[in-house]
Length: 459
Image (tube, rainbow, N blue to C red; front, side, top):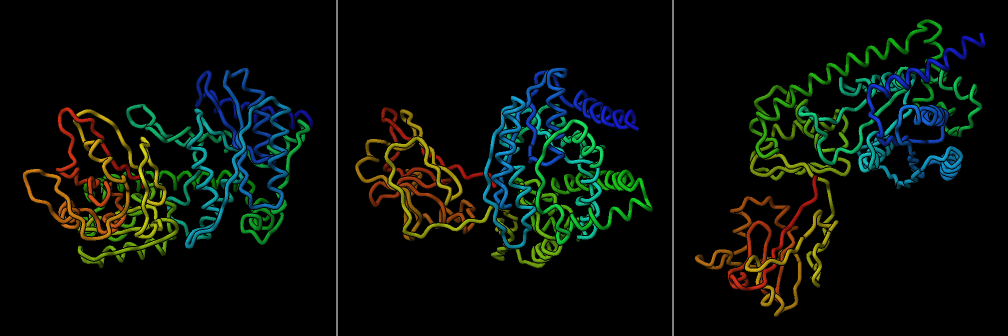
């Protein structure tokens, strides 16, 4: 019996080692997501034992969500554990709050993955295992999830493009080397190696759906269907394959139904309702949006289908808003603009970031280009909103015109017209994004010039 147990534990090490050999390269930097529970503590032990043999650098990340009353104890435990192993650790604290129409779990998960994305590493290693796969699948089924929601977690989340290069700003790849290992095997490894770990006080609370399945339902399933974990994993993989095919269809439809990466309502209506819903879901996911419920997604699509092209449609869910302008669907992060009296005095900064406006204004000095800097300084240099009645003459060969009309002709959506940062010298409108510099302030060939540009944050 003892030899059988040791063989199983050795098998865990071998399985993790085989996956690492397939997925990582020599001198890669691996960051383990360390919660302090038995799963991540065991994985930390395994990775530490393999790091020299496989020549990779190992560090840890602990995310303190601040949800549990014992969150700070978990943080301290992880710090001490990594010190004992000589492994560098980074602690990140989050402030999690529930938004309307979204679950706390989904918000926390999205926040974690946003942190993973910003790490300077080759791989983030997570300790999700075979039981997690089974629990997640059944939970998703009970929630009425679609094909995408029933898809298996992949061993590695592939973020390499078709040309073999990693797209910018995608962050490290997510690697899960324990997905074929059961919880009982992990606990056996931890006990055999006399590891210490923290226990989440909520794990035994069966009022939580996942715990109810874990403690009440799965023990019964195991008596009748001993291999239910691998069977459910196989089902999840079938769903993941179907989900990939749906993404391929959505990618094709996106090319047919989009202009400048924005869905066109008239083209969307030519698709069947299920196909249009698939495209909308895919489009939102591509923009990093926390997806709404199936009912909300369907409601959004019905509103898009029934709206006129000139309708000022405005739909909100979570921290996202959908607006329509001239038949194009605009998806953006919802924000509350400051009052019309908002203004900022420029004092020579090279860049001004305005989170309240969702972007930044940049300034570059260049001879003979942009704004005549000397003339600009004749009045107080202010950035503010349009109040109404502003006029500007960007073309010296044409008369001064209403800024409102120029913005309309330039096809600025109404909500953007109201939030554009405008540059004034005293009471004179000097520059407007997308419109240009007023003729009377344009730099001559020999003048020291200032190029001003507006850079909205990615949606």
